[in-house]
Amino acid sequence: MAKMLFSLIEVALLVAPSVAVLHERAYYASQGILEVPITGIPKNVSLSKRQVANPLINMFQGLEYLISFGIGTPPQNITLALDTGSSDTWVNPTCITGQRSDLCAGIAQYVPASSSSSKNLGNSMSLAYGIGRAQGTFYTDDVHLGGADIKAQQFGVASDTQSLDTGLLGIGFGVNFTTAYPNIIDQMAAQNITNSRAFSLNLAGVDSSSGAVVFGGIDTKKFYGKLGKQAIVPYKQSPDGFPRYWITMTSLSVTTPSKTTTTIFSGTAQPVFLDSGGTLSQLPATIVTAIVALFPGAKNVGSGQYTVPCSALQQQGFLDFGFANTTIRVPYHEFVWQADVDLCALGVMANAAGDPTYVLGDSFLRAAYVVYDQDNMNIHLANAASCGSNLVPIGKGLDAVPALTGDCPEPVAAVPKATSATSVSSRKPTSSMMPITTSKPSKTTTTRKGGTTSSKTVTTPAAGVGGDE
Image (cartoon, rainbow, N blue to C red; front, side, top):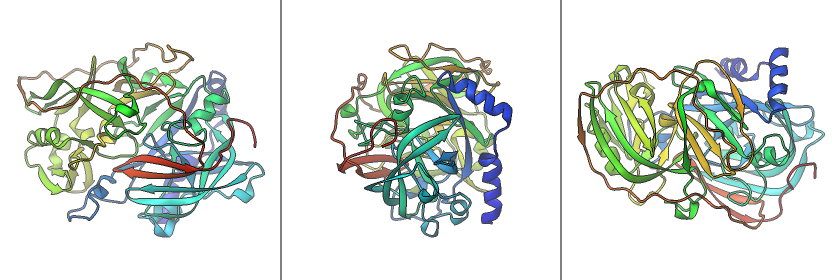
């Protein structure tokens, strides 16, 4: 089984690019654009029919979004899970302690001794997650990604992990926010590989196994409508007080297959953060209860989760998530996750009382095209589509992300037959985020909640920005 899975991963991610592709990558890299494919591989943790001790453990069912690139001299091909909810990059999970040994065994391990550019920093790494942990040592080495070479990038080399099947490529906020060193987004900008700390993400829908992350660029043939700009909520004003991609959701409605639209809330503000590492979304229980009422046959399976009849996958309903003047439409077949042949999960779960981690995970992101602009503390959103490829660079300064309209045609919208409203309480909107300055530790303790990551830095020096140490 491990050999079979390795073949699938190899075909999807590790096949050497053609000469034409290499020339294309070089051309776009000269404009500060690095396009790297991502591939969805099913995780092994299923939505359990029994209760579990950890209230969030069942959330980790779905697709692991993998990205492949080279590390070292000569390059060693490494495959990691792409994660907007964390900031550290680390490699080499311990397969025998994972939840899916076939997936882990099919992915090559990084060998520092085989790279002439590898450097052991001697600083410890400790990362704790809701479903496991990773401990090891920080190194620097050259990273070869999307046609560019990132010199002396710091990352962790794990020596012991629990319940984790892949390493992570964390693309959340880095230095001066959650890490004591420049993470990969910081380094790409610092080394003038990209024009700024910005990237776009297209996970692609459940019917497609591959999407792409574009560092420093936008693909106008992967969405329709205008990119709507949303200010990132200042982390000190966010529900959990941690730097994440927090934005303000201002409305939510559900249109059922009978074309009846119910407004869950409108005109108020619900902070949420975008996390590619979480399969399901997480919202306050009042909102989830109102959504569940519109799915006949929904069953509470505990821990805030609900199953729904798998027939919902074939129905023409959708949810509209509003962000000021931008609406992202999520069809039922993207929002409902099929965990097994006859077991389907609603794409949102209710937060436990006192849990402020309100998340829009993959059940939302599969329907959205998202541009993450760290330098200007903005998120840009549009409805995902696919009609070819046209890469546009993200620049520098206040207008780094251009005002773009997607090249794909807008699909014919379903016309609601009747409307009703359900009122739920929410929060007031907040302003844009401002950076802070922190000390430079290199031992980092990270806690991951339901597909997201929180970090607390603890001591010691870090590698510098750019160049070999």
